[in-house]
Each structure stands twice: as C-alpha cells, then as structure tokens.
Amino acid sequence: MEQWIIDNHDTAKELAESGLCDHCLGRMFGKIGTGMTNDIRGRMIREALEEEGISAPAEDFCPLCENVFEMLPRFAEAAAEAINGVESDNFLIGSRVEPEIAEREKGLKEKYNLESFESIKAELNREIGKLALPMIHRPVEFKTPQVVALVDTRFADVTLDIAPIFIAGRYNKYSREIPQTIWPCRECHGKGCPHCFGQGKMYMTSVQEIIGDIALEMADGQEHFFHGMGREDIDACMLGTGRPFVLEISQPRKRNINLDELERRANQGDKAAYNGLKFVQREAVERYKGAASDKVYHVHVNAEGKVNKEVLNNVALSFTDVSIDQRTPQRVEHRRADLIRKRKIHWCKAEWISDDSFDLELETDSGTYVKEFVSGDEGRSVPSFSERLGIQCKVETLDVLAIKYEEQ
Image 1 (tube, helix red, strand yellow):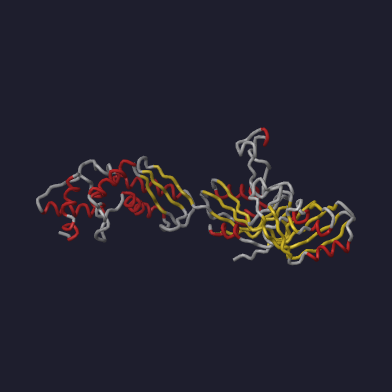
Image 2 (cartoon, helix red, strand yellow; image 1 turned 45 degrees about the horizontal axis):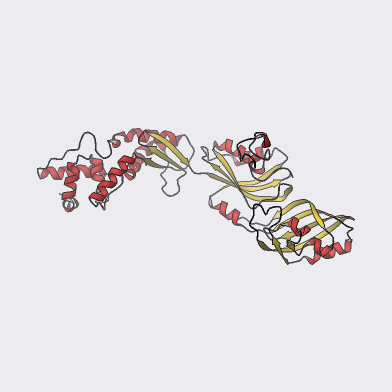
C-alpha cells in the first residue's frame, strides 16, 4: 500500500464509502504523489481498501461531479472546433461548472481539511486540454494565451475569449472637420436621436473610424479602440510625419491581417492618412499614452490692430526657453480639472502676412495650449503672445507639424 494512502487512510475510507467516482476521490488527494491522473489515484485508493476487505465502489451517479468526466470527449471536441475557427499561435482551455458542484466540493474540502486537494475546474481544464490538443495543432500557453476556450460543462457550450490585436502607426489629419476618435452624441450618448440624425455621434466619421472600420472587417473583430499619443483639436490638422497611435481590435477571429492592404485601403480618402503600421504588444498603449513629447506647431493668427513687422519678430524671438503658466482654458474647463499647468515655449518665429495677420511656428512642451498661449485666454495663460505684442490676437488655424517621439 502506498505510504500516502496509509497516511490518509481514515479520510480516504470515508470519502470512498460516500460513493465518489475515481476522478473525484483521487482529486481529494490530487497533490500527493506524481506521475498519475486523479482517476488512477482514486482506483489505487479503492484497491488498497479492498486489500483490507473494505468494499467501497463508486456509485453509478457520482454524488459530487454528477459524472461530468464522462463528457470529456464531447467537451474536447467542442473546444477544438471553436478554437480551430479562429487564428492564433496558441490556446488555453478553461471551464465553468455547476455552482452546486463547486459548493459541494468546497464543503468536502473544509470538512476533511484536505490540504492536498485539487479543484474540479483544474482537473477539467487539464483533461479537456489533453484530449483537445491533438485536434488543435497549436501549443498551449498558460501565461498570455491568444485565445481561451471556456467550456460550460452544464451545456457543453464554448465561449471564446480572444486576446486583442494592437496595431501601431502614425496618422495625418488633413480635415478640420473630423475628430480623432468617435464622438458620441451629447444628447443620446450613442443611442441615436434627432439631434445626431440617428447616428449616435456628433461627427459622421473620425480618424479612428476611417482605419478602425477597415481593420475590424479584416480581422473579423468585435470592436475597435483608438489610443493616440495625445490629440489635436477637431479644427486642427496633423501634418509632418504624423501622430503616433495604437489601434486595438477586440475579439479578432483573424490575427494575421495584411497591414499593407489595411494602409492602402485606409489611405483612399482625403481626410486622413496612415503610415508605418506594425503589430505591437499591449504595453505599447500605455507607453504611447504616457509619452510627453515636444511638439512643433504652425498657426495663422489674426490681430485686432496693426502689427509692426519688427516688433512682431522681436516678440517671437523673446519666447525662447520661456516658462508659462496656463490655467485650464475656458473652452475645456467643463471637462478638465481647473489647474495651473507649467509649460515651456522652446522657440518661436514669426512671419508677417498683413497689417492684421501673421504666422507663427513654435516648439512647445507636450500639453501646451497653443491657442491660449497666443490669445492669453483673458489672463489665464501668462505670459502670452498677445500680452507681449500689445495687441489682442487669436489663432485662426492651427497645424501640428511634428511630434518629437522616437520609437523604442
């Protein structure tokens, strides 16, 4: 008789006599001994008891698992069929059991103080996986699986949890009439109403939707999310090499989509353009969103008085490595905390256009409110270009020329 059976003799005897199946009996001592399955472990216990003249056969209907292990082949086939319907490099199988079974199992564990117990879910996951593996032809991955098949043992139903795909790149925005991301209607919050003409959103399209809708179709996914490295105003253009972003596609049934084709299709319109698409890991989202990159802007400015060329150039040059204090602008104070933020203007140069208009090109810290730097925002941005010029000014158009971020 195995020593571990001798050490647990009385508990094993009582559990065996309760009619547990071999799987459930063996699982009560699942972490004792190696190189055997729980059903073998359970049979060993019964054979050892029989040697003592104790007959404790399993009942026809296990009082704990309700004979769920007889369904293993069916569970494995259902899981394999579901997983084979999606693209992935690996997989993992999980399970859901009847709450009543889980409660009964918990009661036995506590009653007999079973320190070497293995849960029914752990055994089901392992045994279904072993049977499914030859039908799937992909490796099992425990830490970061691309697809998890959750088998509901009550109905042999399988639910897939597919890891998102993440596509990084840069975008240019040429339209001053579309936002970066989907903008839900303020009135109906996406449900559709007369205010938004039933669309559920304030704008017909966005930088996100132009590429996201195509990627969603190609990946046969469920939803897309857009993670930009900051954002420009709707009425601003994003020029130069573009703004870095990560596009996330949830529940993609196809992972290996052709990014050259995605880029080509997304670039057929004139509102936005995309370049440098590549697959990245999830961590890129936080890296991009957390980056604080200096930015170069071009703005066309209208002045409320006559602008002297020499004074204009001198004011522009005076903003070299100058720190400014910016209180949350009036135009965004309804959705941003009312704070004073310290930012820096690294350099600024001006080009006189007419008596009451000029262009500025400037480099600033990430998060600088450029429109407010120019206007002063009624004293909320100090010092401001208007203050030093001595004439009230307002940005007419704004373009982002560069975001100084180097890929890691």
